[in-house]
Amino acid sequence: MEAQSGGKFAIGNMPMESNGTEFPAAGEPLSRAARRSMATDWRSRAASSVRAPTVALSASFLIVGFAVIVSGFSRQVLMPGGLTLSTAILWVGLVVATMIMFRQSRRPGLFAFQPTDAVFGLAVGLGLRLTQGLLSNSKELPFPTSDTGQILAGDYTASLWLGLGGLVGASIEELFFRAVVLVWIYQALRRRRGAWLAGSVAATVSALSFTLLHAIYGVSELDASVQLLIVGILCGLLVLATGRFWGAVIAHATYNMSYVALAVLGSLLA
Image 1 (tube, rainbow, N blue to C red):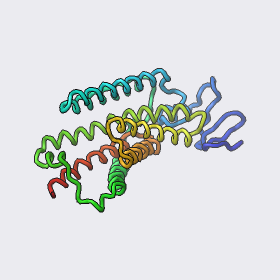
Image 2: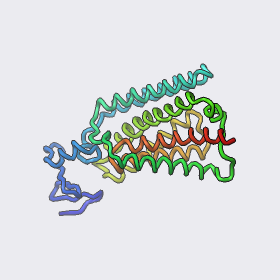
Image 3: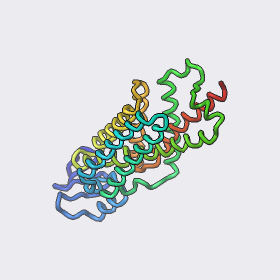
Image 4: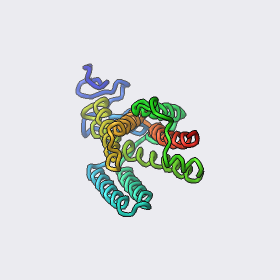
């Protein structure tokens, strides 16, 4: 038996995971343990052999790119009503791209839910908001208020819609950037490069693309971009660590909704 990198061992020419699951060479049938791993965990080496084709990913990114262009155009031309329309166009593009990818590959276990997902998600989301406050040096500034917050303080309907927007936006963005981009990159690299490198690249690329999308929509300040990058990386690490999607959604939604809550509270106290 020879030790190999990435938590694998080799018996003869057959690679083996550290939990004892054997994976045959290309072209050979999968063992029962490998098939079971493939059916329950998208992160497994066996499951990584069944991923969406590159053409599906290319089509998805083309759709998202087109949605970004049309969304940006409507936002500039149709103001003030263009903001809502541009957001809807972008969300539709992300959802369509996600559906294309989901039809092409399986992600076993990704959408399972455990109570710990809520605990981890809330903790990470609140920690991200605290980090945002530290990065923006908020302790030396008065309690935040905003025109949006002042409006929301007297308009509970607007508060509800903005809150729902933060929840829906978080869900759609996590579906595309984590359930599609991160999972595809991880599975593409997992078999040949190992879990650690695949996870590192997948988390970084999904977070960078997430940050870039927000930069296109006007988030150009360095501290705001750093905050979004941290959000993307931590949400990606949650998905990789648990193998499940919901912790990232809860973390992202908590981060979004806490901003709305702080804006309303700041306006009420002003």
